[in-house]
Image 1 (cartoon, rainbow, N blue to C red):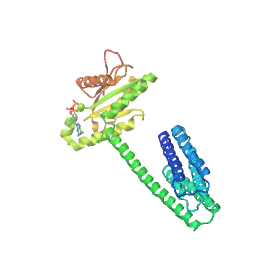
Image 2 (cartoon, rainbow, N blue to C red; image 1 turned 30 degrees about the vertical axis):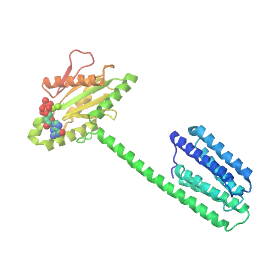
Image 3 (cartoon, rainbow, N blue to C red; image 1 turned 90 degrees about the vertical axis):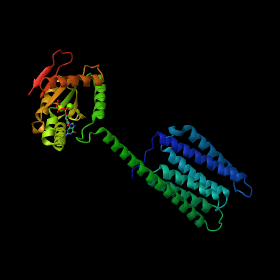
Length: 346
Ligand code: GH3
Ligand code: MG
Ligand code: MG
């Protein structure tokens, strides 16, 4: 059984609920003392018990999320012992104070693991039995004990069930959210990052490079005369080719590189910690691996350390169009500030 570990928010909730329970318990005992028709065996001890309840409530409320986790086991156990003492001080085996064991059971069922709840209920059963044994006999003490323990155990089981149901729903919701986010970031045809997700990755890489001063290159890759391929082989074959290119390229790059489908038959690649010479080598490898002898043109730009991601993409894009204008099936890459772009054909 994995133990649930409450975050600070949970601890604040635990402390608030615990404080409220102590407050109500203190008030119940105080009210029962002033209510007519009840002769308590030890009213001064009950007054002390009630005050202890108020003081504990105030203390838990004031410290809230600063209370260490293990302390809630202590406050629960203390509540259990106080409840048994109140039953004892009332002088009656049939004392209604025993319903305060419900507090301990419900608190534990909501915040603790099932094994811990069983431990707390066992403590309640033991100290309650002790209180009943020490009190003057009156009717069937065992029946009181049994009814109370069955009642509080059932309440704990119901709450535990509700908590499990809620946890199941939360897990399903988180899974759905993760799946939705994944879908929103993925290109449905190729499974690559879509344009938005790729652009976010580029922003992250540039932020990282800003800190490390490492070089970053961006390549825009566009298939040549792809319309003609579609016209000749059909759109389905075109889709198949796009998928095949995506999977071949994905295998050919490093895990740190980010490949995305930028548009119809246009891909984008971020190469972190990569100088332009090595980027050209990588792209040559990608171009050589395209199936069905499909050609492509590529523009590569190295980040100048200052320009925005959009400007960097625009620069790589301008070089892609230069490659198209120079006759396609080539790379145009020029190091930062170099006037004449380096041109590499097949
Ligand atoms: P260029 O060399 O100038 O890039 O020529 P091109 O034909 O590749 O470029 P153009 O922009 O004229 O046409 C792009 C083609 O890409 C047209 C379109 O049918 C095809 N295309 C875009 N997206 C998809 C897709 O998802 N599946 C298929 N099969 N084809 C696509
Ligand atoms: Mg094209
Ligand atoms: Mg295009």
